[in-house]
Image (cartoon, rainbow, N blue to C red; front, top):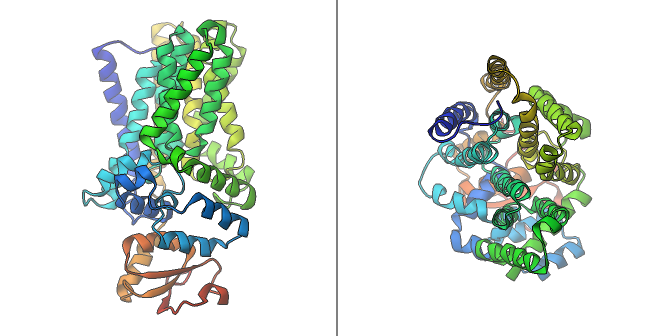
Amino acid sequence: MGTLPHGRGSVIWFGALLALFLLLITRNVSPEPFVYDEADYMYAASLGFAANWSDTPSIAISDFIRGGINGDGRSALSRRIRSGNDVLFYRHFHGPLFHYLLIPVSRLGWSERAVRTALLAIPCASLAVVYFGSQSWMAALLFLCSYSVVWSTELAPHQLFALCSLASLILLLKAVATGRHLYWYGSVVAAGLAFCTLEIAFVLLLTLAICCFVERRRWRADGWLIAKSIALFLATTLIVWPAALLRLSFVKAYAVLAYLALSRASPWGNANFMETWRDRILNSPLEWLLILIGVALWILNRSRRNRSEIYPLGIFAALMLVATLGVLTVAPRYSLAFVPVLDQLAGLALVPFLGPLRRPASFAVVALAVAGLYGFTWYQVLHRPHNPNPRSAAVLTYIHQNGLENKAVFAPQADLPTLHYYFPGMRLHGYFGPTPEAPDGAGFAADATIAVTIP
């Protein structure tokens, strides 16, 4: 039951799954103006391919480190970097691969909803990778009904990271199963692309290193194979993101990641550990139930072959869960680092236990899984609000109504990216509290102040 038909039948089934997936995910696309991260990403895309490829303009790494050592205030550092059009800052120090896709789409003059919808091609590609790469109905079904996937429709590189990491891990599974070096090298290239997307890719690189060590005898992993693998990773990075190595942009990315993890109380949201995991599980209970069953069956499975061939998924998921333990937020996109891989592991682990069932029973299990997973997700899509930030439209309307498009304005720091993107002629000064304080306004003559609460 877990495996898929071959040839034309496989393509037809994938078309059916893709249609079901698009029915779900497109209903979650917001038409509202771009907010915080999205506005910065769109502005970075407006700087063009060359700027994003070379990370120019960007603050020198020496000045970047000096500012951190001197303890420059967040607001002062933000103003300094924004005034210099620092492209790496506008990408939030992520790699540029996502922006290579965003740049052409952002220049078509489309609406916010259309731009967001166009980038749904990324999770659609992930579904194809899972479907054709794993040849598992259950893995594909878990992915297309996953809360973290279906509700991550904003402009962000996390869906692309999920695609790259899934591709890398599926190729790694094939390398483990067959011992062919070609699959291993493909996995290394996909890991390089993941590195050029999000800095959390270090978990994927560590997974590859562990698996290479485990398989060293069977693969005959001598120094030459290691050297070629490192060279292939570096070549991929130099082609896609040369500034990562030539300008040490990746050092900035990891420095910011360390700062957020160690120095900020709640950099990703205001939820605590219990609230974060309660939200994740209750928003997708059947998915998590099947993940737990699949992982338990994989651990307890007596068939050493099935267990050993998919162990890279277990290593990656465990390492990623540990690495993201401090990412406390109810935003579903942050779960994309590990949930799609857990879906893949559960789907593949369930295959041996569902396969021997008689045909009518197999169809009954499939029908139950489809009805439960898809039905629950469809109910959520129909009954949950699809606009996570209604303030964005209210702020833009307030600016237009008061003629502030080219004025000097005090604004809450969270509104700065949106205002900067939509009103490039506006002179902005951010504040963090409920109202601007004296240090916030030093040397800045504001024409107006945007309140935290728009009337």
